[in-house]
Image (cartoon, rainbow, N blue to C red):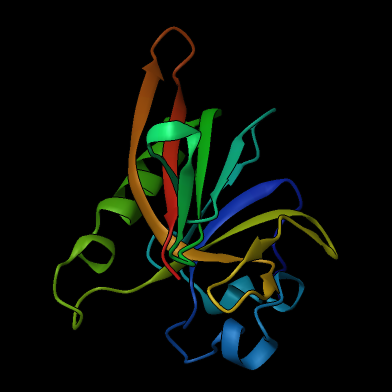
Length: 172
């Protein structure tokens, strides 16, 4: 039985599952066609409940430099990118540990390409409702290819839960 993504969650997920079901190639990157039974939680994907707010920062790659006499010029590198900052995500300590293990695993931090496995960010509001990103070719996608630059897990011992902050950066 197929398991679809749960509305209201942020997913960090690899493209290719163990059984070679590649949701980006096979299903056009449509999160609605993603079958999570093909993936192992904690190894090939993790999920976090969408917090009350998060920041989706985008950069066009254009730099403006000022010169003397009130003149300026722009340099257009055509290097657009996104940075998503999700902070204050409340979750269980066990899920926080699962997420940290996924992000910090050799699969997602290794310097050599033989070990490193790329993953994707999906912000899944519901069927046909996903946060959109513009890829390197200028196409709008329902996912964003990239890496987590870092994060913070704050464990609240009084109620034994965790608050997570992650910083995701696109790498198209």
